[in-house]
Amino acid sequence: VKGINGLDKVVLRDPRGSSAEVYLYGAHVTSWKNDHGEELLFVSNKAIFKPPKPIRGGIPICFPQFSNLGPLDGHGFARIRFWSIDNSPPPLQTNTSSKTFVDLILKPSEEDARVWPHSYEYRLRVALGPAGELSLTSRVRNTNADGKPFSFTFAYHTYFSVSDISEVRVEGLETLDYLDNLQHRERFTEQGDALTFESEVDKIYLSTPTKIAILDHEKKRTFVVRKEGLPDAVVWNPWDKKAKAMADFGDEEYKFMLCVEAAAIEKPIALKPGEEWRGRLELSAVPSSYCSGQ
Ligand code: TA6
Image 1 (cartoon, rainbow, N blue to C red):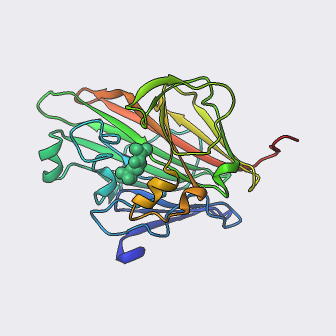
Image 2: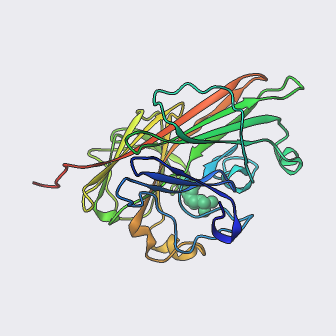
């Protein structure tokens, strides 16, 4: 169906009520709703749905480069390319038996081959599970005919919708090492308790567990992030000053979002010709029993 500005999007609807929307532009998930119709992802009211701008919010795919950690434009080009529907993907074994999914594929354009001279097939499956969980499974295959390996960095740059950032906690990253993007990517070790938020944060946590939880106290909701093949996790909130500097982000919107991004950054993924990498993200949203200080 047609989305904003006539851009093609795919709507997934599970019979139990959950839904998701994926734009072919960027293979970008822009909506994920639970069976009560509540939106779980943040998309800015000022998001620009106009190529070649990336969409602000949802789940941008950062590939083949995370951020500016290489010669390409920030976060690579996958999020600003038109993907195709993949009608005959190779079988994908997953542990959930979802029947509600879409398969997309990206292959290099001539323009991409100029800036990143490699041949690859990138397949993405976006699926809704029986309990309303949203999963994204990426498969990247090196199809170089010249025998050359390539390597890349990657992130599912997920923007979660939260009711009030100052009431949010993230569990699963305490005591880990991280690179602080606000301090020249210097390495530090996280101290103490679960993460809470009272100012700008932009950190790459290293060698993280496969499960991270985002607790939204006010909404009484917990997001559970499960990931495979993605050792790192980025946590980002621009806070007020950076928010004002972004044209496609409302001045106050930082209060209502948090990015927790399953990623492979510190050790780039290296693929020889014929090899395939798989990186899987599964998000679920559950009512939480957490009560702060009580
Ligand atoms: O993942 C965090 C980050 O790399 C930040 O440094 C921040 O600038 C953000 O992503 C957004 O990047 P974008 O290119 O979408 O404006």
